[in-house]
Length: 327
Image (tube, rainbow, N blue to C red):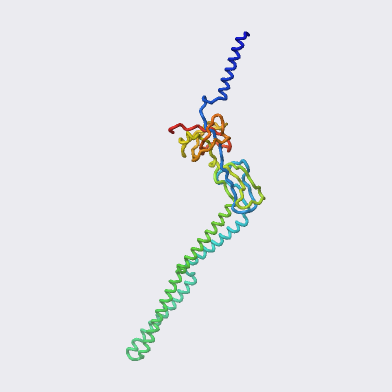
């Protein structure tokens, strides 16, 4: 090959290599610009309010759980006994309230009926005596004092009959209003004590508050768990969010409630997320997202909750499509 041709070939080769390098390493003007970010999740640490040995473990690390699914349980013997005792006290208080609201028993009311019958018979006899003596006193056979005695006996018999009738009416009533109110308050107090005992029992058998991934399990059956010490760590689906960084010149476009599009490696088609937080202060670009495409020094943190879809792993890098001006 002639020297001139050789030189021309070298120059052309250098030009091709330079062009390819520029395309690979230079500004990506041929690709849409993206904002760098990552997935972050807030861990839920589920614990029991009481201390005790772990009696059952319903999940393992890496499991998916549904809302309301049991996670673990502590030994419930002591709290179950307390709950049963509270239930018994409630039954006692309810029985006392029913007794206070009712009158006397039928057998006791029957005694009043017998007394009233005797009083009415005595009243009839006293009236008959009065009716027999009155004409005799008028004819002077008996002294007027005899008529006074008959009249007094008749009035006494009438009063006794009325008294017995009223005693029976009182016997059909319940106890005094204040006594009934006190019995009702005792029932309410016992019901609250039972609810509190049941709540303490439920707290040693927590359930998943939302669909989640079991991140970790800290205790196994038979181990003693202290009160309020996490036993299971969950990553709830509704607590996963995107964190990405917006140049300070563009931050005015981002508002809480706005939707953004994002993509990630092996996540399929682009997905949407709704902004739920925009940082009020700027910060220097975190080293973890610094790249050729992100050379700005001042950026604002923006958080967005992804729409329902396939679970996103915390720490996964994401690319967020920037919002256009005016949107």
